[in-house]
Image 1 (tube, one colour):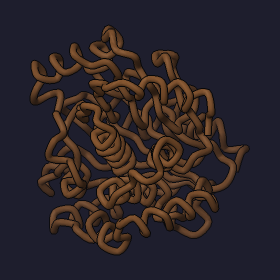
Image 2 (cartoon, one colour):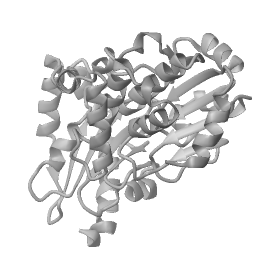
Image 3 (cartoon, helix red, strand yellow):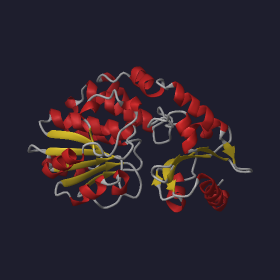
Image 4 (spheres, one colour):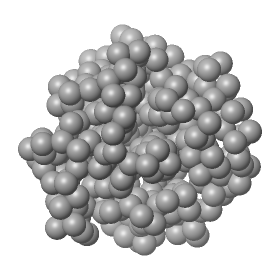
Length: 335
């Protein structure tokens, strides 16, 4: 835990603040869980606090305590602008580049409020005056847990515990990824003691698939391809295939992990077409020492962590597959 960060943050929070808390676009369990947990904590500490999401979030997260209070930027632009204008502190959680929040990034860059980054991705941009950045942490939720327990350990209630448990669980792949440490498990044990129901949370996140989502998973698995002579697989999903299953935000969450679950596979990718945005969204997962973060940064305008990263392509799916194969050929010596 960065002592300088805590010292400065503690000074900020000595007087009442108007805080805005922002997760990245298409927020996942870690982004939304950490944002809501911090919101609950600040409210308990007698500050004003509101979470502003760049866009909507998946249905499987619509049970998180306090989610009904979230402002969605692309639905309430005037209200969001007003809140940002009035803010004294702006927290950015689970992202370290303003491009990760689309048009909201331009507004935040011009805002007069003090900006505080809390994030666990590599290579942070220099847009925040106060930063807690640690790529070795399991999740942003574990970082927020460290902050809260340092500032006021008695403030963790069942709402905060449930939010934090959700983010740690989802970003560690249910505690199986290498970033899961003994400290992570200690945090989880404490959160359970404070009221987080791990069984219920797991069911809400992973056991609530719609019929259409399972149909889409079937299509994704039928599109699974293996690159000859290499421990690498990729999955594609076209816009037409998404439409045929009445695609909803979050429906493809975790699909890339099915490829990585194959025996002998060390690197998996999923490419998902988005006609409206004119791009192919890509997710990368790996085992061992192969850095999908470096791969995504070098070839597909992305980044993330050693074993989990994202990227994008503005070419067609067929062209993106070709680019992916060329990129893989260049790094094949690493396998």
